Image 1 (cartoon, one colour):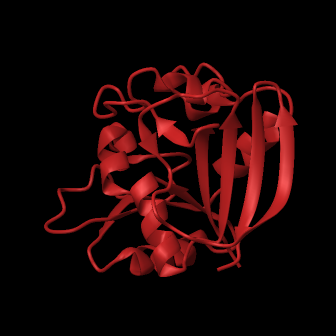
Image 2: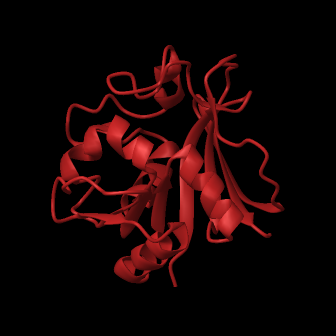
Amino acid sequence: MSNSVLYMSMSLDGFIAGPDDGPGQGLGAGGEVLHGWLGDGGGDPMGYRPSGPSAAIFDEFMATGAVVVGRRTFDIAGRWNGDHHDGVPIFVPTRGEPPEPPSDNVHYVTDGVESAMAQAKAAAGDANVMVHGAELAQSLLRAGVLDEIEIHLMPLLLGDGRRLFGGERAALELIRVVDAPGVTHLRYEVKS
């Protein structure tokens, strides 16, 4: 059975983006340091694969069988040109009339985050479902359909920007710690 897993780079003070995040500045002003543990990219998702212990973490999230992403995050990311990685289905919970999907991989879901997650898990089969987006993660936690959280904790204080969590409450169990150059990967199981 698949798990839903939020993968998120975060500063020690809880920010996942600097101030003024939006189109053309997806990680906000100064927020690009949050992805400093990744490779340089170059257009191909595998170009972001880091070396050392972080490589296994990268391989893990690139092996997910579906993606559930918040609408805001999806739009800021340029809708990934319709493909996050390897043609896996992308489910985007949205309110109101959704736009035309950029590809057959993209599925706008208008009947709630629970439905989006159920559809993603069905599509993923035995593979995990990658979760993207702070507001979406908060909604999934409230709905009780977020299974795990993987934080890529960066050793810095960003000071301002977009926080991952607001007023949510949940019991978490630390199930894995991977200390790597420039980042510590913390994996939690959501208990309640």
